[in-house]
Image (cartoon, rainbow, N blue to C red; front, side, top):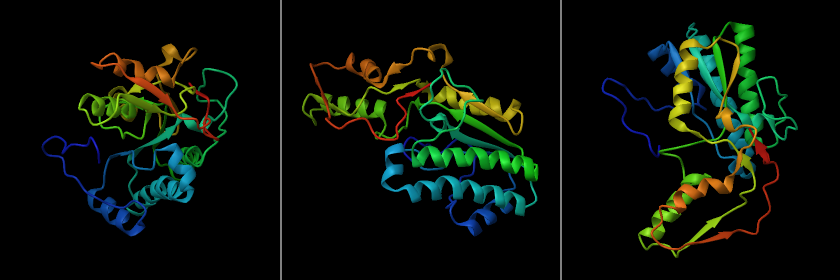
Length: 249
């Protein structure tokens, strides 16, 4: 995976296709984990419109296979499920909280809502100690350049290296988002795993700016000031993506 390292000494890495139930059952039975951070899945909203079945398969089926494998092994590890603030959709009252109704507007957000509710269902029906975290947009090392901030960074790096004309190509940047450093999000995961109440959902975002989130275009400014030459910003003519929440805070 881009940005992924080998991890600290003493950590054993396994590869498994979470959409293959037998493989997941075999691995869970072998490892018998006490804690599971379930972060795997398809995370790019536009891709979910291109191939919705792939998104549902990876996100929902993958999670369900992990849960069922734990039940088959007769273990109840603390299981952290990464949902998403995208599940709230186009809400009218801000900031959102854990009681905000779920109104997903994309195949991706539908899949995350399903993950969220499956986690709760298995907590109720099978005493699986699930923890649901609804994270808002986060950025940081290792993120794919399909996402807004690394897309800016990649283009600027190419311009600086003489590999691209001094023009930064962008899409619609009117959507408003709260961006959190991924390292802070990881700390939130760890804290929730240690101290979270099983069955409950928790949001993760930069709440200090929740009332006035910045448009996505502001995410490019830290990169622009580091450029040693004049650049132009070229915005694509495509309209805002259908199904994308205009404001997610």
